[in-house]
Image (cartoon, rainbow, N blue to C red; front, side, top):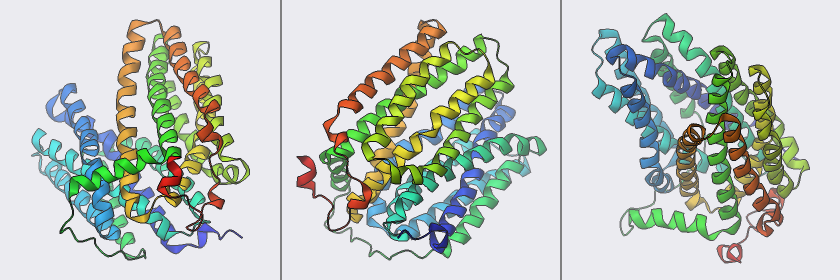
Amino acid sequence: MTTRLSRNRNYQLLWCSQALSEAGFSASMIALPLLVLAVTGSPALSGLVLGVDAMAQLVAGLPAGALADRWDRKKILLGCEAGYALAVASLAAAIWWGVVSVAQLVVVAAVMGCCRSLFGPAEDAMLAGVVSADQLPTAVAMNSARGALGQLSGTAGGGFLYALGRVVPFAFDLLAHLVSLVALCFVRAPRRAEVPSAGRHFGREIAEGLRWVWSVRHVRATMACAVSLNFFFSAYYIVVIVLAQERGITSGEIGVMAAMLGVGGVVGSLIAPSLQRRLSPYVSIMSVFWVLTLLTPLAAVIHDGYLLGALFVAMALSPPTANTTIGTYQLLLTPDRLRGRLTSVMAVIGGVSAATGPAFGGLVVQAFPGTDAVLLCAAGIALVTLFVTFSPTLRRFPRSDTLTAETAPTTEETRR
């Protein structure tokens, strides 16, 4: 019988603290380009500061995974929250005293990106020790809902807080991370002895994580599918936004469209645990691709912003179920000593896909009429769907409830 996750005190502390942190971060990310514009008047510098945060997460990604597998993971979480809070506190103080500089904004953005890059692998790797195996699918789904909910609330509140005063969203972010830091102090997680660095080579540890991801065929297959889907869908998203503007849809309606994608993600995450238990892994993964394949071309004939928002909701409902299936499998399969590196490799590869997809979408919508650009992106998703449908590896994807410490396949078995 599955234990209710709501009774897991440690997970509840972890979830609530990070939901608050996510809201604070999202508020800062909305306010940061507005602050740069107010200080410098340069849209280019606004993009640069946001780009520094994203680049820091990518650059620090692979080393972060190796560190998460070396060091005590709870200490990493506490250190990241403290470092992030200090960076935001320095920015809030500079705003208050009217001495903000571009150099400080760049440094703060870099610190924020590095802290988030290190926090993610450490938290994900620690999750399997905080919750039991039967709670893990629900925990993975709820973490997905947490991210979407925090982003929605922070994005919605960030602009409002900035209107109250330039320092207000950053003060809220600081408070959110301080509360999170205190809450994390009370999370009890299995202690791991720090791995002695003597005789170990950091580069080889990173390479070991890359080899693990590549050697496990189920991980390799799902990674390739997810990267391809993220690439084409992020391109599609940009194309639809541009198409909406060309059709005279107001900026307010476009904002609702973007928010509806998040709403669909939250709802999809809430129903994911139930669907994950009822559907086979192959069906839960394949259904995402077929739903998107059938729905993406509809944007070519929809001229109403609210209907496009409803389309986004429908698209966002099924991915959390597949993510829950894949994420649970990966955490149960991967040895604890490699879990941080697994998460970091997946995050870096996903980050590259998410960064290049919008650039591709911009080129496509510039080269082709809006309707043709939509259909081109939809065709790319359809090709990935055909691969998923006929993939023998995904057809044999194991259920998480059959994968335990005793039955998990070895590395040699997963290569076959």
